Image 1 (cartoon, rainbow, N blue to C red):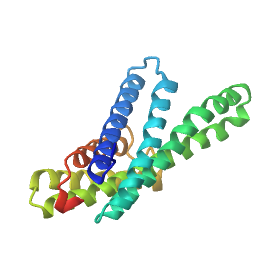
Image 2 (image 1 turned 90 degrees about the vertical axis):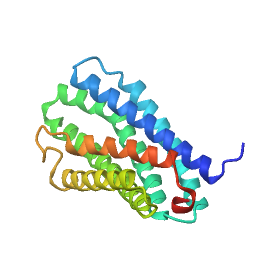
Image 3 (image 1 turned 45 degrees about the vertical axis):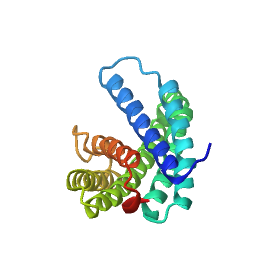
Image 4 (image 1 turned 60 degrees about the horizontal axis):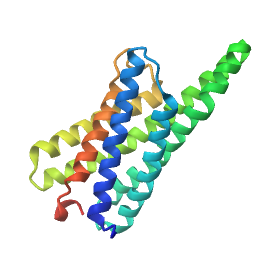
Length: 201
C-alpha cells in the first residue's frame, strides 16, 4: 500500500477522531462515577498516539506547506504518549503508597500535576495545528469551517495555556481547557479528512 500524503493525512485524521472518542468515553464514565477501565481506554489511547506520531511525522516530510501544523501534531502525539504512560504506570503505585504513608501524598499529587502539565502542552500543540489549518481554510474561501476551526483552536490554545500557567483549577468547575481541547481535536481530525489539496497539501 502506498502511503502518499493524502492517505497519510487522512489516517492521522482518523486517529485524532478515535482518540477524541476514547477521551469522551473516559470523561463520561468518570463523571458518572462508573467503574472506569483505565488500562483499556488509556492503553488504546497510547497506541493511537504512537501511530499518530508516525503518520503525522511522515506527513511532515511529505507536505509542501503548513510544516508548523504537522510538527505540532507530531510533537503533541509524543507528549500524549508520555501523559498516558504516566497515568498508567505511576498513578496507581504513588497513590497506593500515599494511602499507606501520608507523607507521600504531595509526591502523588505532583505526579498528577505533571501529567496534566503534559496534557495541556499536547492540547496547546493540537490547537495550534487547528488554527493553522483553519486559517488555510479561510484563505481557500471556506468561511464556516475555517472560521470555526480558527476560533475553537484559539480558545483551546488560550485556555490550556492558562491551565498550564495558573494551575488546572484556574476555571473552577468549568472544563474549558479539556472541553475545548477535545473539540479542537475533533475539528482537526475533520480538517485532515477533508484536506483541500492546493490550499493545505
